Image 1 (cartoon, rainbow, N blue to C red):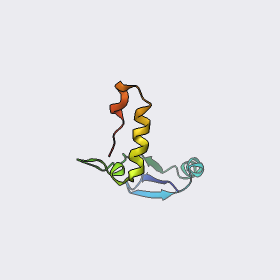
Image 2: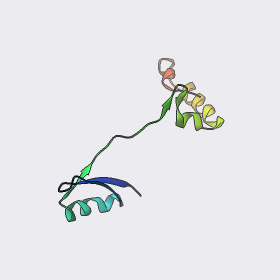
Image 3: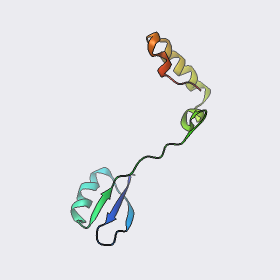
Image 4: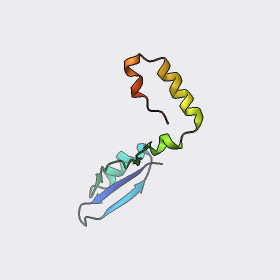
Amino acid sequence: MPRYDFKNLKTGEVAEHTMSWKELDKFKEDNPDLQQVIGTVNHNYNSGGSATLNKAGDGWKEVQQRIQSGMPPRLRGNIKTK
């Protein structure tokens, strides 16, 4: 279930609340003293490529090679392999 950060406008305290996306609008209406805080996503990169790509199994490399073979030659460099 998604987590949302809200700042209390009176105290300045930021708290995390867990709720479904459907519940979010109702929560905002019911809590006018809270303001949603939108942050950035933390991506972990290392010198060998993204951590997610490094964790992918060897089968993923084969899938990427098949995708590359069907692409125009000028775009094949856009697919990063392990």
